[in-house]
Length: 280
Image (cartoon, rainbow, N blue to C red; front, side, top):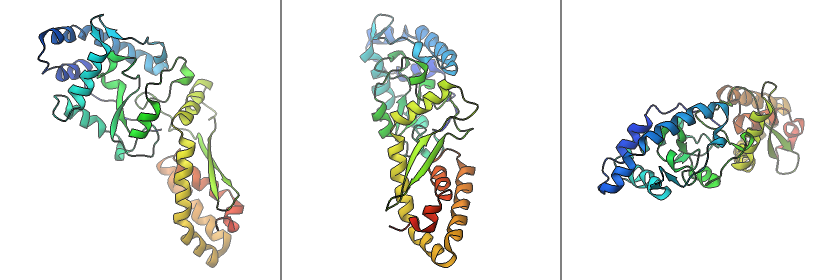
């Protein structure tokens, strides 16, 4: 999971842009009248997100009692996502805001869409509120769908408000079978409370990261076989160990909780792998 810089756009400015070309006078008036409610909702979100209290925000089917969920969702789908919609350049800007276009939810796949932390199907007032929207990959977006949290522990990591990159929580272990593979799991850092760790565990399960990381690490092992085998033949297990140590230190310096860091640390700590376990 990766932290992102919060968008700088104001919620009402984005909303005004999206509804700027609404032609239906009745709909335009009803949407305009939503703005005070959006301001209040955005402020409530800003207060509750750092406290891990977003689960206390009530789901709803309408805004002001006269703008339906479907109408508000279309402000996003028709007036921000559409190729010629007035808010499209905001959509493109946010979608491109993740460093190296890497999804902040899985920290692996490429971003190609936007995701709503509070799903717009249950929280339509947040359909175009900037702090509720972030870049993600389609796979993570589809996995989450309209999941709603009802406790702090089940609220997955928020890319704008949560920082989980400062302490080690992702580990792996070598499965000593031919061909070698790895199992990924989480550990609780000493300075984390139970709720923060429970959220990491929930996020790890929800987005099926164990399976994703195991798949990519398997490819990494296969790609490195020729190099490691040559090292083993010329310098023995010690040569392999030194290579793995360099990989671990390099990866951890870039991202403490990447699957690559966990992979190379596990391989570095496995005498079985270094002494020939890498062979198919």
